[in-house]
Length: 444
Image (cartoon, rainbow, N blue to C red; front, side, top):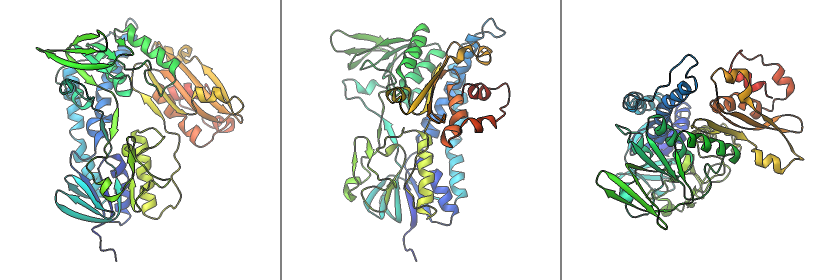
């Protein structure tokens, strides 16, 4: 009989934990999660869910602008009211997730966890033992080591602003920087984006990124490229940003969007010998760390697949099956889609256009100007292009799109990619018409 306190104990309570903890609990195992902050972790409380409640009004504002003179009137996003709405939605998330955990008989332990050995975790002085441990501590905003770093704000700060500053300067040209630039712009702020290098959204198809940047520039966003910020100084209610050479910029608010780093410090990894690096915890094909019986999932893991919520959910579900004995197979990742919630949006999954172009003997590429599709014209969309990648048997294996609804299109065709549908399977799918899904499948 197992004398441990738990069969499985998760350190962290985000998607990498609770999506697997509940099925394990329902399967009869003794399961616990340790959380020192809000239950649910970053995504529901400070990340995806909070962001989309701000992005949705920004998207609607963008749509109204497109439809001005076509039956609708342009309207600026009201930040104050939007923020109230955001708080109404997000404040419910911890209790909701706690109830989900309770439904699976999962015990919530509150406090900071630190590994003592391969089966023991110390939480604020109390020891808890488990047959298996799962590190699911996620990631946090990267901190810039510059003079005046105390004046910088992170994504959580931005998504809690009571009022939108008149002038926002964003450091970084990745997901967070570009998405928040779009949101701040829709709320009426003047937006500057400072990028250290010459590349924006490096993981996306660069010709589409160029179109996105041109669109944001046309809306008034200023991009300052190849610039290292060295200092931020307070000047009354404003801030002076300075950098190499004679670069100087005055602004009302500075948002640090220079990326995220895994939470590997101060949780006892060195004590028990769990291997990790700057990219996260090192795991094998079973998500097991260098210490037998200790696993890791979510953004804390060093991996090649995108560090996104869907990835964390998939890994958590996998561990639930592995640790319950339902599977003994290594993890096999599906096509993981990714999107930048800008206007327009860029979404993609599978083989990229660059990879396909480099292997013409393996892949075939189809480019579609979907902006000219009649259904896209209903919303008077200004952008619309996708690149589809097929294998030689005409199975869809990659898609990249720039449009206002690129995320919906990629989601629509994802099953075709994952399950290897060919022309015969597509013919068996009479889509609802008219719809964005029917429009998307019409290109395949």
